[in-house]
Image (cartoon, rainbow, N blue to C red):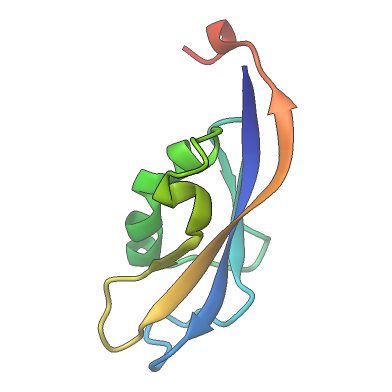
Length: 101
């Protein structure tokens, strides 16, 4: 099977940065389940929780008409912050599903 590696990046903050993140902050999801954050940086757990349910689907091919194929922006639930994240596919890798379970 093949899966996409992902980068989740802070695209914009339309309110005030309550959690201390800034535009351009990111984390990467590679090798199916390896989440990495650049050294010395952090990623708000509430923003992570908002995007996490969609990442497994974004790692896979979806039908062209599926909304997830067209939409790559997700919002943090904090109404004061209005932080918007963008999910980007950064690469594609072949993986053996037997190695993952």
